[in-house]
Image 1 (tube, one colour):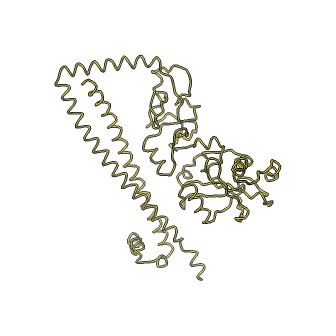
Image 2 (tube, chains in turn purple, blue):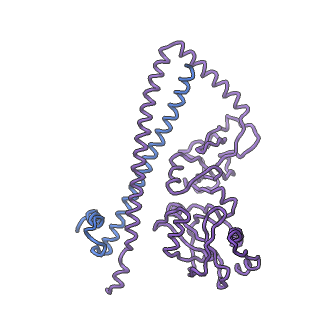
Image 3 (cartoon, chains in turn blue, brown):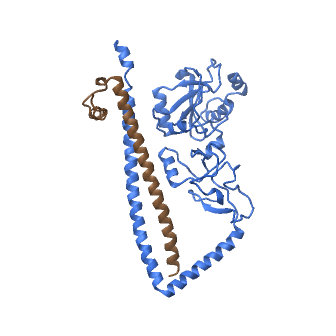
Length: 324
Length: 72
């Protein structure tokens, strides 16, 4: 075996370094989680003790006990009144074709069928009672229009994965347990997917740096477009991909605040857009967050930014030529 | 044959280099890393689940406490 063949048989040293870093990151998270658990446990024990003492004190004193019963009675009356007035509120969680979460309406909610709940982001929504059993959802696996409520734990996990969920975003837990997040800005800007499904990509096209323009879109996401000077584009189908260079990967990480691992799929489409598929998402075959956008729309978004940068906007004809 | 775990530890300590391992050993060491990472992930999930359950219990206790306090 010559030296070259020998080198080719080596596992890239970077793989080890990345795995070591990844392990360290997870270890840190594990330590923090343990610490958090200890804190919560202590708080629970403290509150449990205090509550027990308070209950004993209340039961011992007939005056206090009577006052307590009176409060419970008042609460029941209040709930009865509210049930006649309660209206459903627009939920954070979308895909409402499955009426697990009621859409916004002026209808009075019948509390026998619906229950008003407070979601993790503080928004109140009406949930059909029989869909509340999260342990055993009555929805078909892989049915993308069925939704479920996210737990604190799941929201934390999203945060750890670098996905910041804020009010206005669509956070959907699908029937198969996969969580999909659609950023509010993305809907507004009709952006290409940040994360996309890894479907068969049967063509690889190599583009030079000179052929590419890196632009910043309205929602702050960086995208790559083919340079408009380039006339060599023949195939604009989504199936054409390009391998990213190390420099490009570093740039994507820096500019988008994401960390790419060896498991992620990072591809550049023939229209210049960079598509990142995170490992977990790829594994679970999640649907893209943003999808079904034509190349023309991407260039339209890009040209808005280009205008701000003093770069000439592409005409419709130029775009048509490019698509052809 | 030397234990893969020991080989990995030596590699981490810099006592052996990658070139000292044949390709099969390298793969096994890499797999060991993956297994360790997966194990830590599972631990994190279990810890978080337990934390979440405690938080729910605390929320219930808070409700009871509020009720008990309101009759004062």
